[in-house]
Each structure stands twice: as C-alpha cells, then as structure tokens.
Image (tube, rainbow, N blue to C red; front, side, top):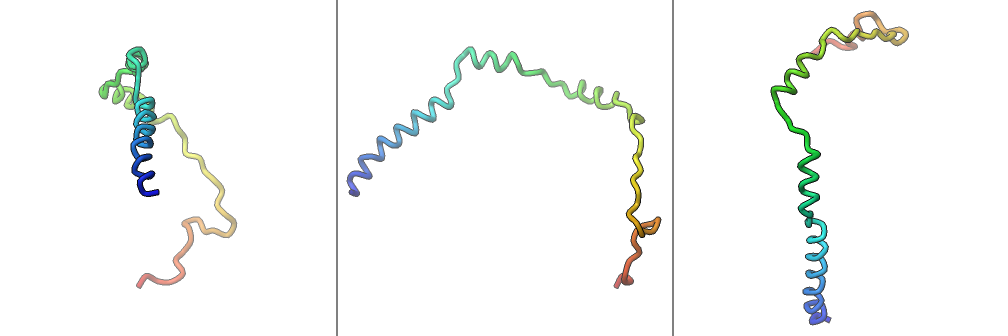
Length: 81
C-alpha cells in the first residue's frame, strides 16, 4: 500500500500540472483582445472629472425623530466618571 501511494504520486502530480497549464494558457489573440479592451487610465483626467462634479448638487434630507426623543438627542443617564 505504501509503495502504491508513491507510485500514484507522479500520476497525480502530472494531472494537477496539466490542469494548471490549461488554466494559465492564454492564446496570443486572447492577450491582444485583453489589451484592446483595457481603458487607458490617466490620474489627471480622473481628478478633473471628480472636481468638475458639482458639490452643490445635493440637498440634506430630514427624517422624523422617533417619538419621545428630545430635540438634541438622548441625555446621558449617568454623569461621566
């Protein structure tokens, strides 16, 4: 039984190596396609996009307070120690 496990070790390693090659293997056409779809990134362009967004384009939305809650929140129950 011990000898069989050493014998099967090479077959199992080969199986996992072949599976790993299938996963890692990318054809030249696929590599070119990945580069073509990739959008160029320019940090300055992104900065200007974000700074151009209007900071005044929002309004604060008020929600109702829960019943029985004072205007300034819940007072502390005990003084701080």
